[in-house]
Image (cartoon, rainbow, N blue to C red; front, side, top):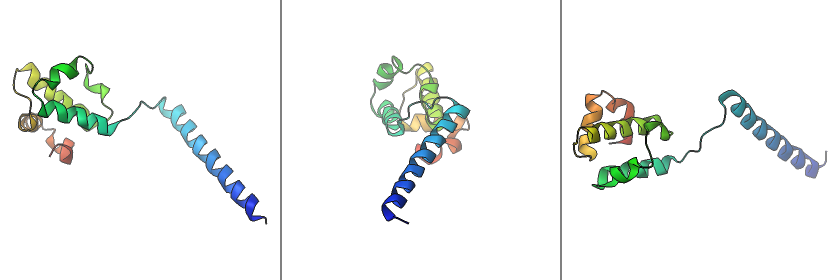
Length: 112
């Protein structure tokens, strides 16, 4: 067997199997939304660190479903809840809000 053709066959199989896996995922689940987990974390972190950041963010991000990660959605809901109660938004108040909603264990190490 020719080694050059063997490598060519392997590369072709990889392309075919990778493409079909993506196609199957798209067929089963529909289109996959864009994901930027690090960006989501940066936005949530900025909201908790900067005093007026929530007011700037809420103009763009209206609902928690804008976040891809479930834990990020829960954190954003807690932040929204604090804002609705006119309470300060920082790491301590967000952790306490998640604890009261019994979601702190679900969010886990992400916030701690």
